[in-house]
Amino acid sequence: MTVERHEFASDNATGICPEAWAALQEANADYAPSYGEDRWTARVCDRIREIFETDCDVYFVFTGTAANALALAQVCKPFQSVICHQHSHIQTDECGAPEFFTGGSKLLLVGGANGSPQRVRPGTDKIDIAQVEALLARQNELHSHQPGAISISQATEFGTVYTREEIAAIADLVRAQQLFLHMDGARFANAIASLNCAPKAITWQAGVDVLSFGGTKNGAAAGELVIFFDKKISRDFDYRAKQAGQLGSKMRFLAAPWLGLLTGDVWVRNAQHANRMARRLACRLRKEAGIESVFPVEANAVFVSMDEQLAGGLHARGWRFYKFIEPDVYRLMCSWSTTEETISSLLADVVAIK
Figure (cartoon, rainbow, N blue to C red):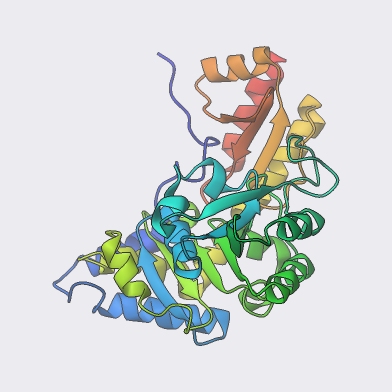
């Protein structure tokens, strides 16, 4: 019987990291106040303010979809639109949640630089400002959705990372148009590890208004953060989250794993390891199997082209990973728990099949 191996399917497939697990066990040892009145929730909020070096509002939700959709609902009226990349998670993988929770906002899609929205190649995974400007020029009369926000993913769905300068350039356009800038940070930790910068440098200092900060892919069991860097924007967000079913009665069980991640910068070390394993995997695929990465490996994802024989052969041997782009581009994800031994096992099967 073939053993199912999900190590490279997703960074969601991994377990809880030891530090988050220990914090969760500690929170489970006794009674505690409910609905976020506990000491774990308070400490995480304080720690986020320390890490980002600013007085921000922090809210817990259960999923990344909730984080993105509710954050966008907070900054966009129903008749306003959200400009995002055509391959962004809010467009491809959230089942219309942003549109649903905003009550009518429309996602306006743009491609990346040096490529049409229909083509996917290196350089097309980040928002092209020229395309955004052209879109804004068309959305200027009563019969169109009024633009309300721009959303960017950090790291992107193709595993690349926006630099501080790229974010600031988008933020300049946002300010000029009186919009809001949302950052989908499901893999924000991996971006910080890649850029080796202070979190403030690519968020509020660069012009980001609201961040969806992901913990699940970084070693937590569940639970994401919505961080508003301008408290005026977050007014009554607690009611929005409650109405959407995102106020946990035992909130400490969402908060405690975060405390495990944020204490001693475990979240950064986990991301550094995942990124390092991705670079290692890409290097070995190139050197030992002649397989080049389709996109630059800047975070914890490796995208490669595989023919049907190789992909099918690996699946037959139990390896699980996703085809991400038709017709033949597959994604291999690394995580805080990826090991050199696992990479070696995968490479041995790749070489054997090829």
